[in-house]
Length: 245
Image (cartoon, rainbow, N blue to C red; front, side):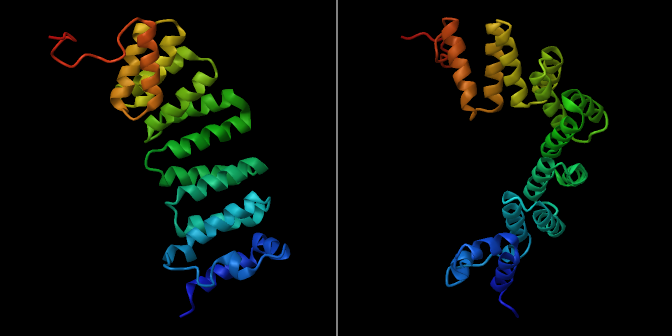
């Protein structure tokens, strides 16, 4: 059986990127890392991972057509590997290949578990095709038929904030907050602070911290508002009312 490392070598050296490096005087063995550099071997490196890496290199060097081919093959071998879909989508959008971009959105929709990847793609595609208003309308329409409506609603709410449509954004973030999405509570805190409703903002930020305790910016917002309101930075322990003996 042929050494799978030789297959990787063939893929790299036959690519436009490999040819470019060789033309610049790079040593093939050093370029590939095949001269004793492998101490273990991941079987996927001869398949979709190699294709993904080559595709990313190609599009990064401006070889879109070749990169697209490698990335499509990577997705054929590993449909679940959405990073390949994201790289292909970005490259297609950058070159104006809207058909491939749309196909990539459909692939991500079928494979994505939480929906956020394809919802972001959908928003960007609609924006490029028809501007920010088209992106908003596309996401609003998608809400009614999306099986992953929370992800679509989150992307819509973000776009509404960007468009300055705070009331509609607050409605959607409110639904997300009540569904346990920390970003919904955090965004409501930001919107309340913008209106000068600091007590309300503090409540939303504390709710966001409850849902996502590791988010550092939430903690900073809470501390800043508590200082502004003249409250202690540390909440008293439960049950003692903050009193000391």
